[in-house]
Amino acid sequence: MKRIFKTITLATTSVLLLSSCGVVRKQDQFVLSTFFAVGGSADKQQYTKMLTLTKESGINLVELTFLSGQALDTALQVCEEIKLNNIAQDLTQYSGFGDQAPPFTDQIAEQTVQNLQKYQYNIGFYVWDEPTMEQFENTAKIKQAFQKLAPQKLAFSCIYPSYGKYDWASGRYPIYVDTYLKTVDPPVLSMDYYPYTDENSQLVGSSLWQDLGYLRKKSLETSKPFWFYFQSVGDLQNKTPEFMTVEKTKGQMYAALCYGVKGLSYYTSYGALVTESGEKSENYDALTAVNMRVKAMGNFLLNKTSQAVYQTGLGLRQENVYYLDHLADADFTVDTSGTLLIGLFTDAKNQYMLIVNLQVNDTQPTTGSITFPQSVKATDFDTGQTQQTSTLSLTIEPAEAVLYTISNP
Figure 1 (spheres, rainbow, N blue to C red):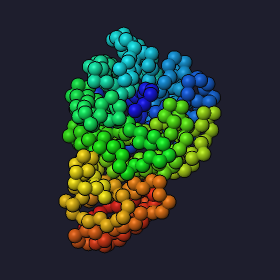
Figure 2 (cartoon, rainbow, N blue to C red):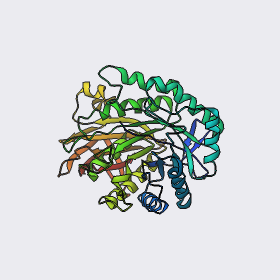
Figure 3 (spheres, rainbow, N blue to C red):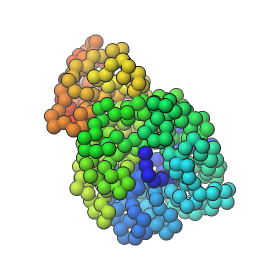
Figure 4 (tube, one colour):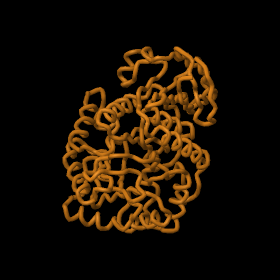
């Protein structure tokens, strides 16, 4: 759950193609984005340093959040100069957060569209960040106003995780999600979840899996692209790294890919990738390498269908709670002492298996094997090497992932 806001817009170089009514028709590339890429100083030289480093790290969309007036204009100008797609937010004019928003009128919508249309790399409007149920009607109203005036752009909103106002214990979270989908009908289904509250937090056993499982289910039911915000800083308010590591960050990214997400967003690149003074962070190079691999995997899986998600080491009840598929029903068996997350994808020709080691705090790799009922051809995504086997041996470093194309021999 954030303590801030966001925005989105689309252009001729957009990351989405929209129909005339604003419904996503096709997403043509995997989105790797960031919430809060620059601060509020409005210093163009510093913005240029920060946004250039952000783009060079592999990010292809920035959300210009917590900016208004001259700071937002400066950021938009820099994005034009370096050719970086962006989403604009202005909490003083048209963007809502939680249960609050400035008064919105048709005149504000028209002026906003007019002001932003000169920016080719502005691809949308950040309509509302984590709206409460009481604000769904207003979220829909703003979304519809922008869709009518600028149907080629994205009217974006993002919903609460289950540790916010709406939780699973009360039964309110699925009601919240379902009502949002029915009332707002967003072009993209987006959610944030930040699982690391301290240095001892684990991905294994996190309620993150319940949220991801339900959002994947609704994404498949509604045919809406699923985007996910992951945690990259320990101090969410001040946006400083604290106890976050590269392993904790990339473990979330690879795990989300297992759930068929079409977009990932840093919360936040400011602090994780780029320092407050506009320099590379200590983890910049390592995270850049992760970004490039995640984007490559995301683009490879972009047009594949998410068929199943499995997690090892769980009982039937936990699998149901997490909206997972039952590993006992899979057409393969898994033998491992660690905790693996397995995303299965299909297209007209093959199956694709993404396997993630969720033991992000370990120092030793997880080993194991996957046994198929017959011999298959397994092609490694990274190396391109193919092996014909009925048992696929696994050695996966903590927070790492392997991706295979599985085909008939």
